[in-house]
Amino acid sequence: MDLTLQQADTIVRVALEKARAEKFKPMAVAVLDARGCLKAFAAEDGTSLLRAEIAHGKAYGALALGIPSRAIGKRAEQQAYFVSAVNTLARGALVPVPGGALIRDGQGRLLGAVGVSGDTSDNDEICARAGVEAAGLKAECGD
Figure (cartoon, rainbow, N blue to C red):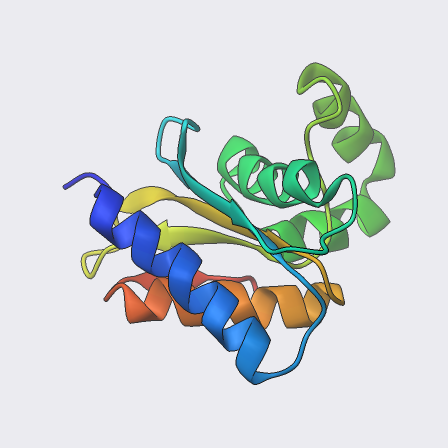
């Protein structure tokens, strides 16, 4: 099963709805399929300049290493040289802070990743989880 456009759109829509309900700062949400290709994206009015790139980097990093961006951040604390080397290989595209979640189906198969950026990293992750779960899928956030 592949991540569908309808599922990706649901993830984006609900992540943004969650941000508004919680009165978080303006968000950007990027959904990548399992190949790392952009499937859906939206940025709210008022997001700062690099929010799209940060959201993409959280999702891309999760796919690149096969672990959520929260776990990449923890690994960076323990193995800074490794994460730095991987980020160099990825041309600086990894963002090792919470807000990037792997997307899995009910059988645990990897379908893609979502990255959210705009508020605190923990709040970004709350929105990512809400979007994925609304699409009937499982968010692997690293908690």
